[in-house]
Length: 359
Picture 1 (cartoon, rainbow, N blue to C red):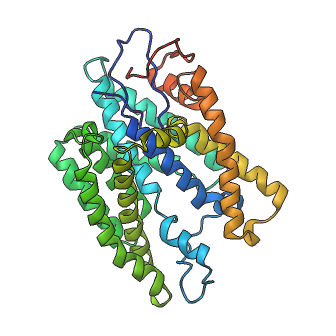
Picture 2 (picture 1 turned 60 degrees about the vertical axis):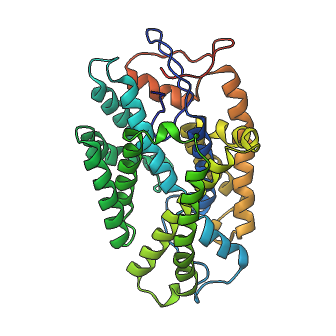
Picture 3 (picture 1 turned 30 degrees about the vertical axis):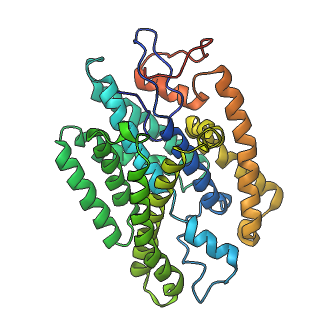
């Protein structure tokens, strides 16, 4: 079973005592990098607000500007990318468990250390830089839901995933419950063998993407046309429902495109960001806060300025990720996270001619 670190995986590398594994699932790196770009775009203003977390009503509501750029952001960006990250977390968690089971004495202890390390990193990010940090939520939900679910049969995990996602939307998009449901959904995809076959079919993601798009269309219409007349709970239901469905469309479209001649280009653009996603997620906060010191309060930032700032951050991170990964197996924070996970120092420098594989 190929190994993928949960959520923000770096290039796996190998421990000195571990035999080489199968190649990693390249599609997950592309999906992770794509989601990272979207999350950055959605969070630029919130990060620059130095901790303020605001759930905005759809820009197309009567009380908001009808500027076309804002409307596009409300429909295609806000709340559309963290579901992808949450799903990838669950997939990576279960792939790692499958990879280490039978190779270490206490595989769940290894996963416990990994989640506790993520919690410490997230708390530092939350307390020192940005109160909108998602890592603390991921670590806490992982400890309370994902880790205990490893003792359940896969059918129970899949059923709980559907129940939690549905409950989260009915409750108005409760983020913690939604994250828990998506974690379990990702875990179920691994346990049913779907994750191993992500790149084996064009027809399946194409049909699923069409189904997601068909369901998303009315949800987007309600979000953009009727938001002004809704109470907060109804608004949250529709924006998070639309977000989850559009996220599904994004995933399916990328999986289809990875089966076309566009695959090399998508891999070049998104995979380096995805393989250093923990480092890039945290460094983006530092970069955006630095931009705020130059440009001042984000309250007056136009959508065009937000897009430009996000593009500038990515233009710094992408070449640095590419150059770093040419020499090293994984990003610096991914390496540190892996060190804590395994309780011993893993190699960092890339061996000449060595391919990425499971540990």
